[in-house]
Length: 67
Image (cartoon, rainbow, N blue to C red):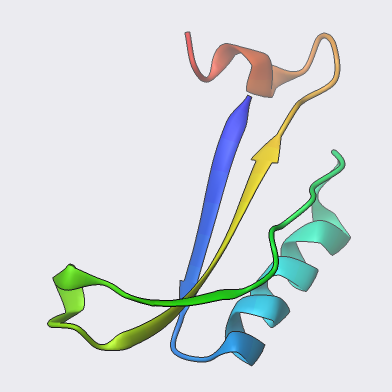
């Protein structure tokens, strides 16, 4: 399992990143709807986020990343 988090300045930017990743990644990815929030690392600036969990198929090189 691989967990992805996308972060951007605008909701459109995050959606564009998710679409680009989904178009080239060989595994099914289901990104969450874009969420708006504040991130303390950026002194309270508004940021937009999307999360996904990727479950690689059997015999995938990604299976060994968490080992």
